[in-house]
Image 1 (cartoon, rainbow, N blue to C red):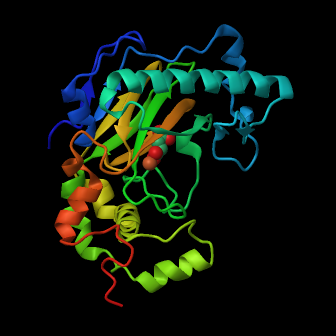
Image 2 (image 1 turned 45 degrees about the horizontal axis):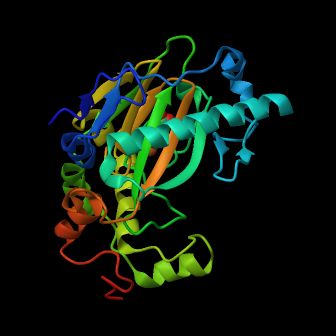
Length: 297
Ligand code: SIN
Ligand code: FE
């Protein structure tokens, strides 16, 4: 397979001046990796890098666009400090993506920013929720109709521990492998889920297929063990960027990471034909996001 990682040697968040080949790389599902571009945790923020900064029962700490911090432990003063640190990362991540991928300027919608203080390898999870299994990201409750999930990650581990991912084969190869096993889309089922508020809007056939791929990949032990993949240690003090709805990924180990999600409306890629929506539409042979599309029953 094509190397799933493109390494770029920036040392400064303001150094990126977009090049079409970087946009093409990320749109082909590759991960842009910046081994020398760290997010700076200030000396008086270092004490925030501990597991108790996560509230019990929470998966991540997150900072909303409204400045509200959720899922945090620690004292009120520490939470204010943490919100400032996460906010600083959000700003840098946004400026960085604007410079790195200028085609998307003004079009990205900012999701809450997360801080992930949990140790990955000691986390017990159901198969479906287990991100130690290769998958593409898909949202069970929030249909996105082909909106893209662009993510900026920074490993802020203070002890030099890498965040180790596995990165798998190109989206199209994976889609070709798993689509034949996908359950068919049924409009009435999507309507029931919507009526019961299991989903926030009607699940499209695209959203259905993305979830099927996510689940089929995670539940396939042979694919998990023997599917085409490489192990990638993202160093402490590094940054990486990918479309997590396209790059097949799993996180194996590590602790303390910052993450910013940016949503790009469908069709706004430099090359929309490379998107999961376009690939699935070609493979299935009919539109997947029109309401009522593919609804034989
Ligand atoms: C994921 O998106 O699957 C998790 C990534 C990470 O926590 O490193
Ligand atoms: Fe994921």
